[in-house]
Image (cartoon, rainbow, N blue to C red; front, side, top):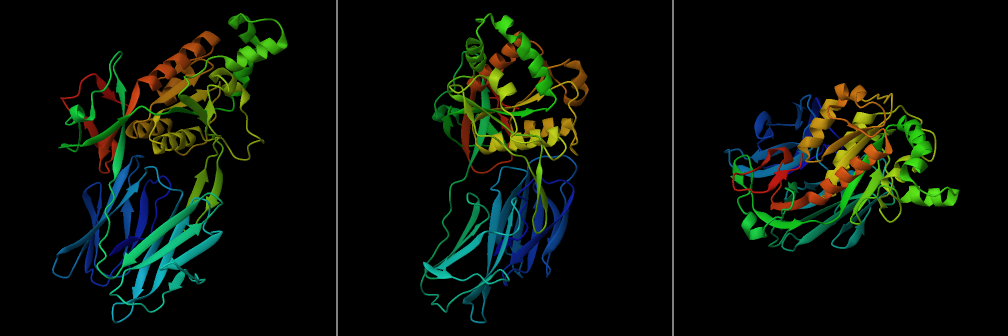
Length: 439
């Protein structure tokens, strides 16, 4: 009955406008943001301006439909500033006077641009042609039977959006079980109890959460490296052979350096580069920050990765460290793994982000993603912007920082709770023992 035609695929701040498609039986729609009413609609156009505020935080947008007598018909939610698919498609049925669907209107958006490579649709397994005006014409059909409309919009070879609608007959909507992952950190020499004994340990907005699973799984560190850090890393490399007390032959040096300062076997590392490319969609301009594949400890240690992994070509845009840190945190949260974001700074740490560092740190805390800031120069030069900064200007200090990272990832666990919840609202109760939330 309610379909969002506005997709908040990226990070959202400030005034925005949402647009809805509603069924004919809907007389009014109430819009709430994080549970607070922000407006109501009662006629076309079903659009409403909303202010998402100046603080970058996960948020929940709720649209509730009512009929002419004020009865609640449907509640539809959209999560904002949380991990989402890079593409989305909505399908709105168009019905004839007899109530039988005669067509469908499509709306889509992607961070890779507004023009898809292909639009595919099937009705009861038979292909339909998508018209240039983003519509589908449906064949005449019997509402006594169940019918399925499936639409897939492909934007790249690996990125697509899928929507399925079913109606007719005795069809009833299937309700899927939605889960939220919660990252926790164990106290030293402790472990979580069984799932049954974890009930009552977590709550959201004063209500207890049902724990359904606990896992250790894989861990990853997502690194954002200041381009100026490469000069500092080069100076560190020139002293590394003596500090590591390794052999004098060049091939021995390279072998030892490549393996220096490894993460654990179940921990990986990847980079997000702080140089965005820009993509235009129908309603939004997206900044896309490229990422590497994940490196395992079998391939190289942290020391070699920090100074050996480079961009394939010279950056064409200005460096945006704070925004890259936010994207790194969003990406780490999306995988629901044990995680950390590491920002590696050189001497100057030039940053052209529109988002202040303090907002980036606050956002990662809300996502339950730890942010570690390492400085290869004097740490005090960056503390005013970033808060706590770790000095890694010598190989010994870098080694200690890597060990601390490795230990922190080792102590993390992922707890799965039933339902979808804003991460910053989840709290430990007084029943919890030997554990803290990852912030």
